[in-house]
Amino acid sequence: MHDLIRQAEALCQRSGMAFTAPRRRVLEILAASETPMKAYDLISKAGEGGQATKPPTVYRALDFLCQLGLVHRIEQDATFVACNHAGHSHPMALFVCNTCLKATEVAYHEVAPILEKAAEVQGFHLTRLVVEGRGQCRDCALAA
Amino acid sequence: MHDLIRQAEALCQRSGMAFTAPRRRVLEILAASETPMKAYDLISKAGEGGQATKPPTVYRALDFLCQLGLVHRIEQDATFVACNHAGHSHPMALFVCNTCLKATEVAYHEVAPILEKAAEVQGFHLTRLVVEGRGQCRDCALAA
DNA sequence: CCTAGTATGTTATTACATAACACTACCTAC
DNA sequence: GTAGGTAGTGTTATGTAATAACATACTAGG
Image (tube, rainbow over all chains, first blue to last red):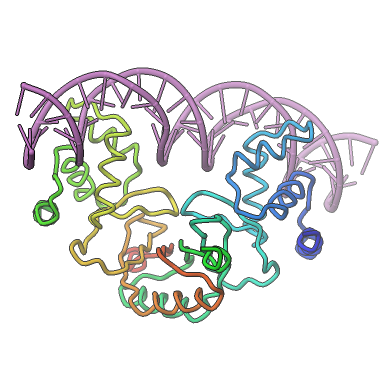
């Protein structure tokens, strides 16, 4: 999706950050992938153009893109996925289909305050929230 | 906490599973730890008794204990923590303090149905839910 | 007894992630 | 213009997490 790339360029320009070659490359690969990718698949894919691409290069790009909200890391299985809703900074849950492995993003507006409150009751002040899941997506349910 | 060990014994007996030496050892170490532990810290700690303890042994024990709900894996940082609320199978969120690294468990009864419903709207059927967080715990807030 | 099931022991390897340092490009202050 | 800072990349090496594959032991049922 070239949309995403253009959004990334815009976002970087606004915040004075550089949208450099490796960052672009990593985002392009992720945007073109149907499913979340493992870091090392990404590394070897990024290296296909003759460009030697080593782990730190890719991990740095991933950190950058994650911070900007253009990419999400799925903690459950250590994979990375381009964000469909870039720009927005909604809190987004990532639900991964057990069959096709695609990730579905679901907003959880209502849920964040509830969890924050529940945490606060125990004296815990939340600064970051991770909501993920597993299950079956619509397509795979219909196909079954 | 010997409570946890006794609970584990009981739980295993009821379900016809064996509470074997490595399983007990891993649970003991986790129960005695203030904070969630990384797998390899666990492995070397388990090996302190002269007993050679290799990764597969410990990972197998961890899988077993996680299935029984006696231990939780914290996906954010690949650590493991003994569960304070064994027996119950409440859905539990794990919030990790950025300062002291201790984990606080918070029930999220109310939240699960909301997320399930939000997922269902997009045709996604949830079978597993992971809710985790980061922030500051009560003790560290008071100390600050 | 012996065999099927369950669990552990052991070796080796695969996969995930970062430390540390050298180098480049660019920008800005003098 | 040039000294020095900042941000980013390249490269080597290593640290950390997890599992594959196969051998061995324990135990309960026929």
